[in-house]
Every structure is written in C-alpha cells, then in structure tokens.
Image (cartoon, rainbow, N blue to C red):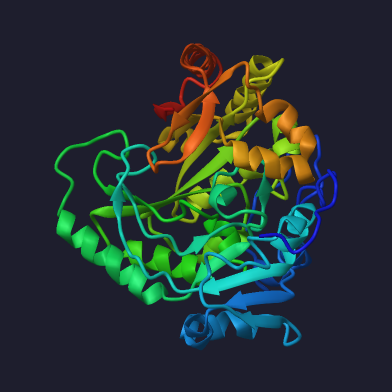
Length: 394
C-alpha cells in the first residue's frame, strides 16, 4: 500500500556515524562519568522523535523504562502489531527517508513466538532475538527484505520471557559432548540475528539482561555480530560467556555500504578493550563483495589486522567469511535511497538465484565464482594473518 509518491533516487541521508579518518582511532575505553548512551555521538545514531508501540509493550516494565529515557515530546502511536505498520512498512514514500526513519523512529512490540532453532554456522543455536531492525543502514542488510519501505529498530519488551526461554533451552541441552566449529566446549547462542545488540543498548537494557543471563550459564555462550562500538558494553562483566563478532571489510567498501556504522578501524581498535572487559572477540569478514580491486583491498585489511591487534587478541580470535547475499526487493528499495551501492551489490552476470534456509529467494554469486573467491580470500588470510582461524566460510 502507498500513501503517496516516493521521491526520486537520492544519496544516503547521512554519512557514517563517525567521521572517517586515515588514522586508527583509539579503542573504546571505560571511563567514569555519564554513559555513552547519553553522549552526542549516541544521539547522532538515535534521536527518537516517534514511537509506534503495541499497548502491551507500552505497559510493560521494559517499555516504561525505554519511554522514560526518551524525550517527553516523543509522539506515540499505538498499533495492533509491530510487524506490519501501514504508514511505516507499507508506504513507498518512506524510501527517500530510509536513514531519517532509522534515526528518529522506534517500534516497541511483544515477541509472541519464542523459538530457538539450530544453526551450526555462526552459532549452534539462534535464540529468539530481543530486537528486529537497526538504526544503522548497511545497504546489504537482509533484515528489511520482508518489511517494505522502512526498517527502524523494533525492541521487544518481554525480555523476561525471552531470557527464561533461553535458560530452559540451555538446561535441556546439558553439557556439550563434542567440540565443533562453533565452540569446543560451550553451546553458542546467537542473540542478535536480526539486529545489532550494541545499538540496541543505546535505548534498552535488553542486551545487558542477556549478557547477565549467560554469565551464569557455564555450558553456553551468547554471541552477536556488530558494526558499532558502544563503550557502555564494557561495563557489563560478561566473564567470558559472550562472544562479540566485529564485522569488518575494506574501508572503501564500508564507506559505500556500511552507512552510519563505526569506521572499520575503530571496530578493530576496540577488540582489545572488549577482550580485557571479559568478552571473547571474533571477527566476521563480511560481506565479501566482489568488485575490481577486492583482493588487494582485503589483503590490506588483513595486514592492518595483523599490525594493530595485540597478541592476546590474536591468540583467541577466530573468524567467519560470509560472501554477499542480495535480494531483488532490497535492490529496488536501495535504488530509491542509495543507488551507488547497487553498482557493486547488484551484479546479475555474476549472481544466481538461490533459496535460503529461511525460505527466502535471494541472489548470490554463482557457485564457481563463489568457490574461487572463497579460496582466494582464505589464501590471503594464510599469507597476511595466519593466526586468524577461519571457523567457517559461506
């Protein structure tokens, strides 16, 4: 459904959250004083002015806590369900406001279906997420493919039910009997499949509650990927039971595709601080986008990792390699707000249609192209960062 004509193609509405620099910024450090979530940098990421909310979410303790941290001038619209909001997800006029909506809009809902499903790649299990959507605007993100024309953060306020479900599931598994590529000892649960837990923590304690829950689970670990350095997470005391996976890619790719994220150099620089704060720190080499010069630029990134990471990070690090997956619907949306990204993301001559595990019909690099690219990137890792164990490549 459309409520009006959409604007023509436009450049992204905002540059990455922090200014890009050729120097390596200092990593995140815990400092006394106000929380990062209250800083001007955090407000550049999320300056919520409009909330769509299910009544039950508004009435919940977590919903009230979230609303209490927002400006009293925030406009609140009650909705029957968080998933399909016609004025938001069904309005093609929102395409030109893709980034602004992510900055200024928040959705509060209740997660009714609590299910943990097997994975075997990033984690043993995918836990029911505490959010869906993101304030960042990565052009290749798979989450908005089913939503339509807007993809702000949806926070689920029934966090107690989510945590209780995960605890029951962990207890039911018992100790891990055999090591696998996910982890040699612990069952690994991805807690951020459809959002970014670091960004969620700017407006909600859901991430803190999940980290605290896994702190007391000796047979399990939480895991989430992130492209945002949030120093507030350093104070959560995970005690080795949460794995942070910093997603990295060549800087030129990130400038074009990772809109509103922390610069790649900052993500890398933060690794030691997160390790020292009690996290396990891994990396996602993701997504790998094939375009002229990609091998040279990935080699430079791997050299940078090798140069700047201290030995203690390298000794425990591992990585995933994830090739680009795209989608025709998302391609059409991107043409409305960031067409330059599609010049590298949409390559019909090199891509083929494939149905994903979740049933979605997506496009990926053809089998031969993907196989050759993965082999080449793995050789680059062996040459420039031989300490970086590849957990899996997909």
